[in-house]
Image (cartoon, rainbow, N blue to C red; front, side, top):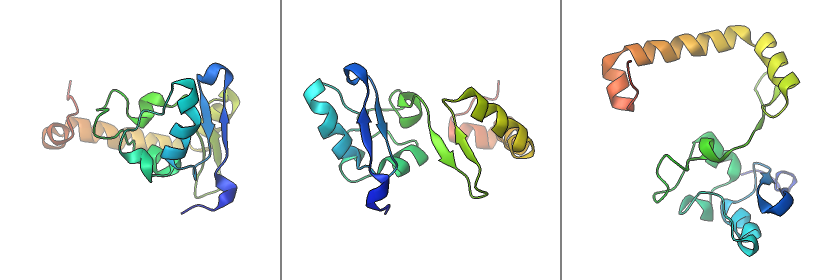
Length: 131
């Protein structure tokens, strides 16, 4: 569980966005958005789950399906890797620097993804197309 220093929430203009730190409970985010007729796209998981875990697990809740999972509702994310690197996906300079500094990691992940997609047994188990 993250400490109080990680529980910031800022509602954007017209409540079209909300910027959340990883320790915010999903239900709290929905209570902040409710007066604006909005919510984060999580139905059941939002009661206790913290935003960091919700995003890390690509959670969506039982009623949302994959159309409204976390990855489809995120505008961006700032992450800190174990090596101390910071990646802010909303900042093109950050993305470019990360691609350069972590090229080997990204290549390895791309190769792993390709191997999974080319493995018919793994691809069918994950619902991934081999085409």
